[in-house]
Image (tube, rainbow, N blue to C red; front, side, top):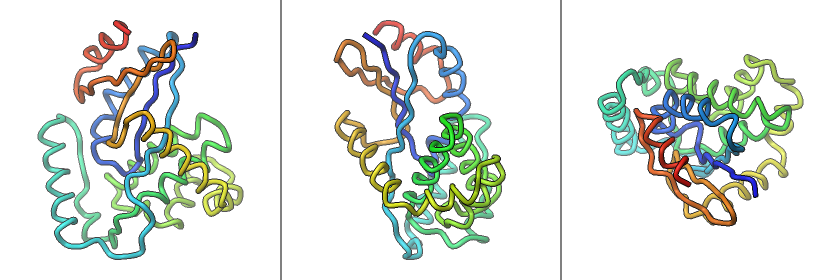
Length: 204
């Protein structure tokens, strides 16, 4: 029976951004040994409400903590001055799914582009117009992407991936789990050491 590694993430999850260099090393080491499936986890539902000041402060503190805990991780704090933050990550999740519809490789490419735009370029991936711009920048058919971004079927797919991740006992991001012979094993994350996670996966 096929062994599958599930990676559940949200492109606007700051811990996922911090995890990215180590995740890349992990996936490169596993590419030839098992199937890797990416799922979007839907951190925050759609909202047009401005982000409350206490949450803005809390997220900036989280960014600072990540920079301290994961060497090399950078954030551009101009985001909080240049943009109008909303606690809304579903648009970015749908963007990943809309990109994936044009080819599996665009899942990771769109995620990475959203992360760079959000964390380094002070652009707001909660806004659909930003997401369409990012789609063009990675070479997607923007007309098809824009249609898919707003499609009911894409929202349904997002809800289904959220449901699947919750059914696996996953409600925080990033998360890793290995499925083998009908059994699901959660992998303890190590944000700086891919080898520690490889040992867990190898033992399974």
